[in-house]
Image (cartoon, rainbow, N blue to C red; front, side, top):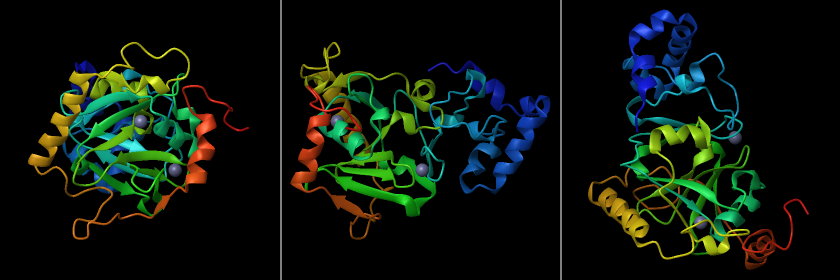
Length: 277
Ligand SMILES: [Zn+2]
Ligand SMILES: [Zn+2]
């Protein structure tokens, strides 16, 4: 992905021209996870004068900085923060998932706002070891829609999803694109746009083109990524599991069958109720 502004803004000379930006960077020296970027002569989106704008407010392109593929993650209220390293179109797998489980999870959190108009979740799959939480870990919790379902982690402070996963033996973490600091549009610059859509049979209304068939290239790409991450030792340190046990680091709730079924009328392909009813 071409990032013409990245080099211009991250160059130390740029700071000299922007006193406000320079000041912002000095502030972040106290933040544990800003070391790398400040050492490289850059600051991050939230250091800039507009910082504090919530997720969904997209900074202008010249203010979006992804140093060396490192991007920030923040929950809606800013209480939980993380960094993800090595984000590029080549190193991550970004797909839009229309499955009813992803829809149910959003409704369980009261965050249907994170779904697109057809109920899709824009997911960026990354290697576990590239995701590191740096703030608000005490607010992280997990939910499973069934006893063997995905672990779906979220920030309990504001019910923002922060990562889906199966188990450490199948190393990947799927992060909803809106959780990235610059939002879904901002992550386009770092990860590229979604490479496809899956499970369109659960989409609301007309399924997006290509989303209902078995998309073999997409599946092979995802499997290839996970195998490569496993072989290259990118499972550990895992952001959600302790290596020794291995047990989840954070508390997990498993929905009862009744709780799971109660979410079905809200989800595609033909929702019987509207969120909030
Ligand atoms: Zn929060
Ligand atoms: Zn899904």
